[in-house]
Image (spheres, rainbow, N blue to C red):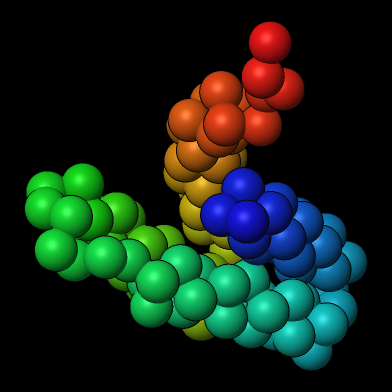
Amino acid sequence: LVVMLYDGAIRFLRQAEHALGEGAYLHSHEKLGRAEAIIDELVATLNMDAGEIAVRLQAIYLYCKRTLIESRLQKSPDKIREVVALLEDLRDAWATLAAPAAAPAA
């Protein structure tokens, strides 16, 4: 499920970047909002009792939110790409962790 959330956020961010590049600011704003809602969900589901990993993930998510706000204000596709890169790295890590659980038992 977490990998699917990352996939959705990345998809919306790419759509926002594309819309921004075309000058479709309202459409970009909508897609950024959807990605931010997914990031909010990722923050809300963190188990802060899990220790340092949860604290670090929370910091990354909050950084992503702040960077997306800046991208809106500055109309900066570069800032969107920065967040996409971060989320892609996290998505790949979660997919690697989930792979053994998804493998059929022998």
